[in-house]
Amino acid sequence: MTNFPSRTETARLDDGDSLAGCRAAFRLPDGILYFDGNSLGALSEAVVERLGRVVEEEWGRDLIRSWNAHDWMGLPGRVGDRIAPLIGAQPGEVVVTDSTSINLFKVLAAALALRPGRRYILSDEANFPTDLYMAEGLARLVGTEVELRLVAAEAIPAALGSDVAVVMASHVDYQSGRIRDLAGITEAAHATGALTVWDLSHSVGVLPIDLNGAGVDLAVGCTYKFLNAGPGAPAFLYVAERLQGEIENPLSGWMGDTAPFEFQTSYRPAPGLARMLSGTPPIMSMVALDAALDVFQGIDLEAVRAKAVRLTSLFVELVEARLGGAGLVLASPREATARGAQISFRHDEGYPIMQALIARGVIGDFRAPDILRFGFAPLYLRFVDVWDAVEVLAEIMDQDFWDDPRYRRRLAVT
Ligand SMILES: Cc1ncc(COP(=O)(O)O)c(C=O)c1O
Image 1: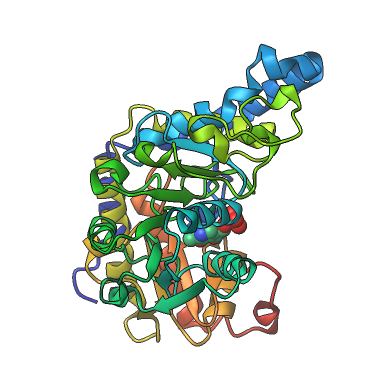
Image 2: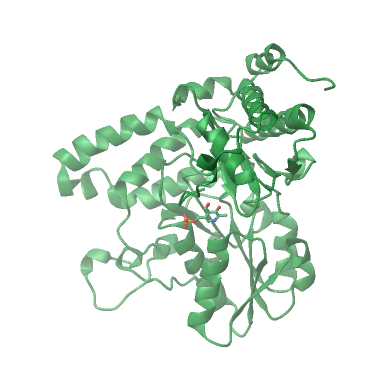
């Protein structure tokens, strides 16, 4: 073991961390080292306080009057405007609504309608399954003239042509954590007349993103990961301002109508992005997201990114120094600038190893067939947590603690 930093040396990194103070904004249970903020972000104090107040006062006391009195109706746009600066968008270009899956369906259908006569939705074969499934379902619905075409992510630019309507890609790959070239792929797509749909689920909140700067057309993303809005919180949807006049929502529900409370028989799309809404917003989750965004107020995303690079680098360094021969193979880019706030290792026994880690309070997750996935949320993870987690992993591997029937039992969520 060469140059293996001690726990004390590692703890000193936290003393010099400009983001260290953000941790106090979160409720983190004792005895848990949380490496799954890329899947379900931690609960913040602001969310606890706000939800309590909304339940008691807005729902409990003011009841239905709150739609007006507390402007519940305005939440999708208001909260969207708070996400906008995190992704390089302007006010009025982001709404919070539905799930990422549903929003993908909506923006893909809208993109196809804007590029009639073009056959393909082009995507990365390793894209997140729901992205592919939604595109498949849409293609089935539209009929024989539209198809989902899958290639390796690196082959997307070469696969572009006048028959591609829309390129759909994830900014950060959910398995490897690799960052895709958002600006480059967008530029290549535009050069052939195609539109772009980006899934920002694994980059929002941990990477500086510049959708406007890159000329991105459409985007979606989860809020329950690094934005910490809570399980099943609604997703966001971005439409570049220049497209908002022509875009159509295939799920034309009453909340996207120009005047829902006129109860007209036929749908009239609302001006601007409001037309991308469909049904009644989930107010509790919306306010949880609104409150969860407080922690990002005044935060420099470059500093968040820099810390994520250092956390992930430390983890790789420690795992390889401490566990060099244990069969863990790095599945994320070795170059820190090429990966998001996530590290994945492959191991044939990845599932029981992760279960053994979780049983000892180190929480990451497992992605079939063999990936142990660790997320590094810079706002609440400490450098010393990384050191402690590697110690636990080393113990599990050194003593084969993972090799236990208890840890092989497959749970519904891995
Ligand atoms: C890249 C990506 N897109 C979408 C989703 C999920 O979308 P939904 O919230 O609709 O389940 C995930 C969930 O982990 C994801 O990683």
